Image 1 (cartoon, rainbow, N blue to C red):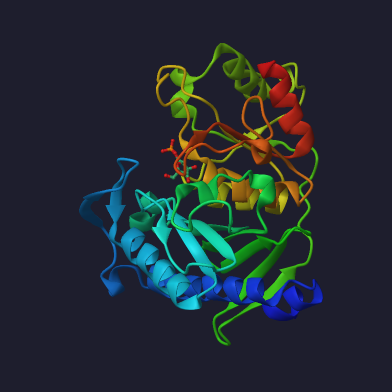
Image 2 (cartoon, rainbow, N blue to C red):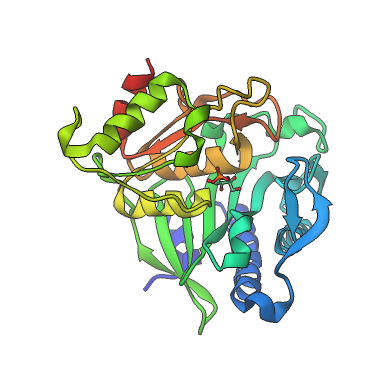
Length: 322
Ligand code: P6P
Protein backbone atom coordinates (compact mmCIF):
# COMPACT_ATOMS: atom_id res chain seq x y z
CA UNK A 1 0.00 0.00 0.00
CA UNK A 2 1.11 3.52 -0.82
CA UNK A 3 2.33 5.78 1.98
CA UNK A 4 1.11 9.35 2.48
CA UNK A 5 4.17 11.27 1.27
CA UNK A 6 4.56 9.39 -2.05
CA UNK A 7 0.84 10.06 -2.68
CA UNK A 8 1.36 13.77 -2.16
CA UNK A 9 4.50 13.72 -4.33
CA UNK A 10 2.59 11.93 -7.09
CA UNK A 11 0.02 14.75 -6.87
CA UNK A 12 2.92 17.20 -7.37
CA UNK A 13 2.02 18.88 -4.04
CA UNK A 14 4.57 21.61 -3.29
CA UNK A 15 7.23 20.46 -0.84
CA UNK A 16 6.50 23.16 1.76
CA UNK A 17 2.88 21.93 1.98
CA UNK A 18 3.99 18.29 2.15
CA UNK A 19 6.29 19.13 5.09
CA UNK A 20 3.46 21.00 6.85
CA UNK A 21 0.98 18.15 6.34
CA UNK A 22 3.61 15.74 7.68
CA UNK A 23 3.94 17.91 10.80
CA UNK A 24 0.18 17.88 11.43
CA UNK A 25 -0.34 14.15 10.90
CA UNK A 26 2.72 13.38 13.05
CA UNK A 27 1.21 15.37 15.91
CA UNK A 28 -2.00 13.38 15.40
CA UNK A 29 -0.05 10.11 15.80
CA UNK A 30 0.94 11.30 19.27
CA UNK A 31 -2.66 12.32 20.05
CA UNK A 32 -3.86 8.92 18.79
CA UNK A 33 -1.54 7.17 21.23
CA UNK A 34 -2.68 9.27 24.20
CA UNK A 35 -6.36 8.81 23.28
CA UNK A 36 -5.87 5.04 22.98
CA UNK A 37 -4.25 4.91 26.42
CA UNK A 38 -7.40 6.43 27.98
CA UNK A 39 -7.35 6.38 31.76
CA UNK A 40 -3.87 4.84 31.73
CA UNK A 41 -2.36 8.11 30.52
CA UNK A 42 -4.17 10.21 33.12
CA UNK A 43 -5.64 12.50 30.46
CA UNK A 44 -9.34 11.79 30.92
CA UNK A 45 -11.72 14.16 32.60
CA UNK A 46 -12.10 17.92 32.49
CA UNK A 47 -9.98 20.88 33.45
CA UNK A 48 -11.36 23.72 35.54
CA UNK A 49 -11.29 25.98 32.46
CA UNK A 50 -13.73 26.95 29.72
CA UNK A 51 -12.85 27.90 26.14
CA UNK A 52 -14.24 30.94 24.33
CA UNK A 53 -17.17 28.78 23.28
CA UNK A 54 -18.10 28.45 26.95
CA UNK A 55 -17.35 24.72 26.78
CA UNK A 56 -15.50 22.97 29.61
CA UNK A 57 -12.06 22.02 28.33
CA UNK A 58 -11.11 18.35 28.63
CA UNK A 59 -7.52 17.59 29.64
CA UNK A 60 -6.97 15.99 26.22
CA UNK A 61 -8.37 19.11 24.48
CA UNK A 62 -5.72 21.25 26.14
CA UNK A 63 -2.93 18.72 25.61
CA UNK A 64 -3.79 18.16 21.94
CA UNK A 65 -4.05 21.88 21.31
CA UNK A 66 -0.64 22.55 22.86
CA UNK A 67 0.97 19.64 21.00
CA UNK A 68 -0.31 20.87 17.63
CA UNK A 69 0.76 24.47 18.35
CA UNK A 70 4.26 23.42 19.46
CA UNK A 71 4.84 21.32 16.34
CA UNK A 72 3.46 24.00 14.02
CA UNK A 73 5.73 26.61 15.63
CA UNK A 74 8.74 24.30 15.16
CA UNK A 75 7.86 23.61 11.51
CA UNK A 76 8.58 27.21 10.47
CA UNK A 77 5.92 26.78 7.74
CA UNK A 78 3.05 28.50 9.58
CA UNK A 79 2.54 32.26 9.85
CA UNK A 80 -0.60 32.23 12.02
CA UNK A 81 -2.64 29.65 13.93
CA UNK A 82 -6.32 29.54 14.91
CA UNK A 83 -7.81 26.92 17.18
CA UNK A 84 -11.15 26.13 18.78
CA UNK A 85 -9.25 26.19 22.08
CA UNK A 86 -7.66 29.62 21.52
CA UNK A 87 -9.68 32.81 22.05
CA UNK A 88 -7.57 34.73 19.49
CA UNK A 89 -5.24 33.92 16.60
CA UNK A 90 -1.71 32.87 17.61
CA UNK A 91 1.23 34.45 15.74
CA UNK A 92 3.81 31.86 14.67
CA UNK A 93 6.51 32.42 11.99
CA UNK A 94 6.46 35.80 10.23
CA UNK A 95 6.77 35.38 6.46
CA UNK A 96 5.88 31.67 6.54
CA UNK A 97 3.81 30.47 3.56
CA UNK A 98 0.73 29.01 5.28
CA UNK A 99 -1.84 29.53 8.01
CA UNK A 100 -3.47 26.65 9.88
CA UNK A 101 -6.73 26.33 11.83
CA UNK A 102 -7.82 23.26 13.76
CA UNK A 103 -10.25 21.77 16.18
CA UNK A 104 -7.73 19.72 18.19
CA UNK A 105 -10.29 17.25 19.50
CA UNK A 106 -13.75 17.48 17.94
CA UNK A 107 -16.40 15.67 19.97
CA UNK A 108 -14.25 15.72 23.08
CA UNK A 109 -17.28 14.98 25.26
CA UNK A 110 -16.93 11.47 23.82
CA UNK A 111 -13.46 11.06 25.36
CA UNK A 112 -14.69 9.79 28.74
CA UNK A 113 -17.04 7.23 27.16
CA UNK A 114 -14.45 5.84 24.73
CA UNK A 115 -16.40 7.25 21.79
CA UNK A 116 -15.12 8.50 18.42
CA UNK A 117 -13.24 11.82 18.48
CA UNK A 118 -11.01 13.47 15.93
CA UNK A 119 -8.67 16.31 14.97
CA UNK A 120 -9.99 18.52 12.15
CA UNK A 121 -7.49 20.74 10.31
CA UNK A 122 -7.42 23.22 7.45
CA UNK A 123 -4.57 24.98 5.63
CA UNK A 124 -4.69 28.24 3.63
CA UNK A 125 -1.97 30.32 2.00
CA UNK A 126 -0.92 33.17 4.29
CA UNK A 127 -1.99 36.68 3.24
CA UNK A 128 0.65 39.35 2.56
CA UNK A 129 -1.90 42.18 2.55
CA UNK A 130 -2.61 42.03 6.30
CA UNK A 131 -0.30 41.82 9.35
CA UNK A 132 1.01 38.30 10.03
CA UNK A 133 -0.59 38.24 13.49
CA UNK A 134 -3.97 39.59 12.37
CA UNK A 135 -7.17 37.53 12.52
CA UNK A 136 -7.75 38.83 8.98
CA UNK A 137 -5.30 36.14 7.85
CA UNK A 138 -8.34 33.83 8.19
CA UNK A 139 -10.75 36.12 6.33
CA UNK A 140 -10.67 33.72 3.39
CA UNK A 141 -13.52 31.69 1.91
CA UNK A 142 -13.47 27.93 2.42
CA UNK A 143 -12.95 27.58 -1.34
CA UNK A 144 -9.44 29.04 -0.76
CA UNK A 145 -8.33 26.07 1.38
CA UNK A 146 -5.23 24.34 -0.02
CA UNK A 147 -5.70 21.33 2.25
CA UNK A 148 -8.49 20.02 4.48
CA UNK A 149 -8.51 16.89 6.59
CA UNK A 150 -9.27 15.09 9.80
CA UNK A 151 -7.69 12.31 11.81
CA UNK A 152 -10.38 10.13 13.37
CA UNK A 153 -9.46 8.25 16.55
CA UNK A 154 -11.66 5.17 16.43
CA UNK A 155 -11.02 1.43 16.39
CA UNK A 156 -8.54 2.43 13.69
CA UNK A 157 -6.86 5.82 13.39
CA UNK A 158 -7.78 7.16 9.97
CA UNK A 159 -6.75 10.27 8.02
CA UNK A 160 -9.20 11.68 5.46
CA UNK A 161 -7.62 14.46 3.41
CA UNK A 162 -7.81 16.45 0.19
CA UNK A 163 -5.34 18.95 -1.29
CA UNK A 164 -7.81 19.96 -3.97
CA UNK A 165 -8.09 16.58 -5.69
CA UNK A 166 -10.10 13.56 -4.59
CA UNK A 167 -10.77 12.97 -0.91
CA UNK A 168 -8.48 10.14 0.11
CA UNK A 169 -8.49 7.88 3.16
CA UNK A 170 -5.34 6.65 4.90
CA UNK A 171 -5.13 4.23 7.82
CA UNK A 172 -2.42 4.57 10.46
CA UNK A 173 -0.30 1.39 10.56
CA UNK A 174 0.68 1.54 14.22
CA UNK A 175 3.35 -1.13 13.79
CA UNK A 176 5.27 0.95 11.24
CA UNK A 177 3.98 4.33 12.43
CA UNK A 178 2.94 5.41 8.94
CA UNK A 179 -0.32 6.31 7.19
CA UNK A 180 -1.15 3.89 4.34
CA UNK A 181 -3.56 4.71 1.48
CA UNK A 182 -6.67 2.59 1.97
CA UNK A 183 -9.18 4.50 -0.22
CA UNK A 184 -7.73 6.44 -3.18
CA UNK A 185 -10.99 8.23 -3.99
CA UNK A 186 -13.87 8.43 -1.51
CA UNK A 187 -17.22 8.75 -3.28
CA UNK A 188 -20.43 9.63 -1.46
CA UNK A 189 -23.51 7.94 -2.97
CA UNK A 190 -25.88 10.57 -4.40
CA UNK A 191 -28.86 9.01 -2.57
CA UNK A 192 -29.11 7.68 0.97
CA UNK A 193 -31.40 6.16 3.55
CA UNK A 194 -29.49 7.39 6.60
CA UNK A 195 -29.68 10.76 8.34
CA UNK A 196 -27.83 12.31 11.27
CA UNK A 197 -29.45 14.97 13.44
CA UNK A 198 -29.85 15.51 17.18
CA UNK A 199 -33.55 14.64 17.50
CA UNK A 200 -33.60 16.09 21.04
CA UNK A 201 -33.37 19.57 19.46
CA UNK A 202 -36.76 19.39 17.68
CA UNK A 203 -38.24 22.33 19.60
CA UNK A 204 -35.39 24.47 18.24
CA UNK A 205 -36.13 23.75 14.56
CA UNK A 206 -38.07 25.80 12.01
CA UNK A 207 -41.41 24.35 10.86
CA UNK A 208 -39.84 23.71 7.44
CA UNK A 209 -36.96 21.65 8.86
CA UNK A 210 -39.39 19.81 11.15
CA UNK A 211 -41.41 18.86 8.05
CA UNK A 212 -38.27 17.51 6.35
CA UNK A 213 -37.36 15.29 9.31
CA UNK A 214 -41.01 14.25 9.80
CA UNK A 215 -41.11 12.90 6.24
CA UNK A 216 -37.82 10.99 6.76
CA UNK A 217 -39.24 9.37 9.90
CA UNK A 218 -42.54 8.58 8.10
CA UNK A 219 -40.52 6.28 5.84
CA UNK A 220 -42.33 3.96 3.38
CA UNK A 221 -45.78 5.19 4.49
CA UNK A 222 -44.88 8.85 3.93
CA UNK A 223 -44.23 11.03 0.88
CA UNK A 224 -40.57 9.91 0.68
CA UNK A 225 -41.85 6.36 0.16
CA UNK A 226 -38.70 4.71 1.55
CA UNK A 227 -37.37 3.77 4.97
CA UNK A 228 -34.73 5.97 6.60
CA UNK A 229 -32.48 5.12 9.54
CA UNK A 230 -30.80 7.54 11.95
CA UNK A 231 -27.35 7.70 13.47
CA UNK A 232 -26.01 10.45 15.79
CA UNK A 233 -22.40 10.28 16.97
CA UNK A 234 -22.14 13.41 19.09
CA UNK A 235 -18.94 14.18 17.18
CA UNK A 236 -19.29 15.79 13.76
CA UNK A 237 -16.03 14.23 12.62
CA UNK A 238 -17.43 10.74 13.28
CA UNK A 239 -20.77 11.44 11.62
CA UNK A 240 -19.13 12.97 8.54
CA UNK A 241 -16.70 10.04 8.32
CA UNK A 242 -19.71 7.72 8.16
CA UNK A 243 -21.28 9.93 5.46
CA UNK A 244 -18.04 9.87 3.45
CA UNK A 245 -17.81 6.10 3.92
CA UNK A 246 -21.39 4.99 3.13
CA UNK A 247 -23.43 8.07 2.24
CA UNK A 248 -25.95 9.91 4.41
CA UNK A 249 -26.91 13.43 5.36
CA UNK A 250 -25.62 15.31 8.43
CA UNK A 251 -27.76 18.20 9.69
CA UNK A 252 -27.22 20.79 12.37
CA UNK A 253 -29.84 23.48 11.58
CA UNK A 254 -30.28 26.87 13.23
CA UNK A 255 -31.90 27.16 16.64
CA UNK A 256 -34.86 29.50 16.08
CA UNK A 257 -35.12 30.07 19.86
CA UNK A 258 -31.63 31.61 20.05
CA UNK A 259 -31.56 34.53 17.58
CA UNK A 260 -28.30 35.89 19.01
CA UNK A 261 -26.46 32.60 18.37
CA UNK A 262 -28.67 30.48 16.11
CA UNK A 263 -25.95 28.08 14.89
CA UNK A 264 -23.68 25.72 16.84
CA UNK A 265 -20.97 24.46 14.51
CA UNK A 266 -17.91 26.58 13.69
CA UNK A 267 -17.21 27.63 10.10
CA UNK A 268 -13.42 27.91 10.11
CA UNK A 269 -12.32 24.63 11.72
CA UNK A 270 -15.40 22.39 11.45
CA UNK A 271 -17.76 23.25 8.58
CA UNK A 272 -15.25 24.46 5.96
CA UNK A 273 -12.72 21.60 6.10
CA UNK A 274 -15.46 18.96 6.27
CA UNK A 275 -17.31 20.71 3.43
CA UNK A 276 -14.21 20.53 1.22
CA UNK A 277 -13.78 16.82 2.00
CA UNK A 278 -17.47 16.15 1.25
CA UNK A 279 -17.50 18.14 -2.01
CA UNK A 280 -14.30 16.46 -3.22
CA UNK A 281 -16.08 13.14 -2.62
CA UNK A 282 -19.02 14.21 -4.86
CA UNK A 283 -21.23 15.33 -1.96
CA UNK A 284 -22.80 18.73 -1.17
CA UNK A 285 -22.30 21.06 1.82
CA UNK A 286 -24.66 23.96 2.54
CA UNK A 287 -25.95 26.00 5.40
CA UNK A 288 -29.76 26.31 5.03
CA UNK A 289 -29.30 28.74 2.16
CA UNK A 290 -25.67 28.99 1.04
CA UNK A 291 -22.81 26.78 -0.17
CA UNK A 292 -20.52 26.64 2.88
CA UNK A 293 -17.31 27.10 0.87
CA UNK A 294 -18.66 30.39 -0.58
CA UNK A 295 -19.18 32.10 2.80
CA UNK A 296 -17.08 35.23 3.41
CA UNK A 297 -15.97 34.69 7.04
CA UNK A 298 -16.24 37.54 9.54
CA UNK A 299 -14.80 35.91 12.67
CA UNK A 300 -12.54 32.94 13.47
CA UNK A 301 -15.16 31.42 15.80
CA UNK A 302 -18.17 32.24 13.58
CA UNK A 303 -20.90 29.58 13.63
CA UNK A 304 -23.04 28.30 10.75
CA UNK A 305 -25.89 25.88 10.14
CA UNK A 306 -24.72 22.70 8.41
CA UNK A 307 -26.47 20.37 5.96
CA UNK A 308 -23.97 18.11 4.17
CA UNK A 309 -23.66 14.69 2.56
CA UNK A 310 -25.30 12.77 -0.29
CA UNK A 311 -25.93 15.33 -3.06
CA UNK A 312 -29.52 14.35 -3.92
CA UNK A 313 -30.54 14.19 -0.24
CA UNK A 314 -29.01 17.62 0.48
CA UNK A 315 -31.03 18.96 -2.47
CA UNK A 316 -34.17 17.25 -1.10
CA UNK A 317 -33.61 18.85 2.32
CA UNK A 318 -32.94 22.32 0.85
CA UNK A 319 -36.17 22.05 -1.19
CA UNK A 320 -38.11 21.79 2.08
CA UNK A 321 -36.35 24.92 3.38
CA UNK A 322 -37.16 27.20 0.37
P1 P6P B 1 -24.99 17.95 20.37
C1 P6P B 1 -19.09 18.53 19.31
O1 P6P B 1 -19.14 19.30 20.51
C2 P6P B 1 -19.87 19.30 18.24
O2 P6P B 1 -19.30 20.56 18.07
C3 P6P B 1 -19.88 18.50 16.94
O3 P6P B 1 -18.71 17.78 16.74
C4 P6P B 1 -21.09 17.62 17.11
O4 P6P B 1 -21.69 17.23 15.89
C5 P6P B 1 -22.04 18.51 17.91
O5 P6P B 1 -21.24 19.42 18.65
C6 P6P B 1 -22.86 17.69 18.87
O6 P6P B 1 -23.86 18.55 19.38
O7 P6P B 1 -26.25 18.67 19.98
O8 P6P B 1 -25.08 16.47 20.16
O9 P6P B 1 -24.47 18.27 21.74
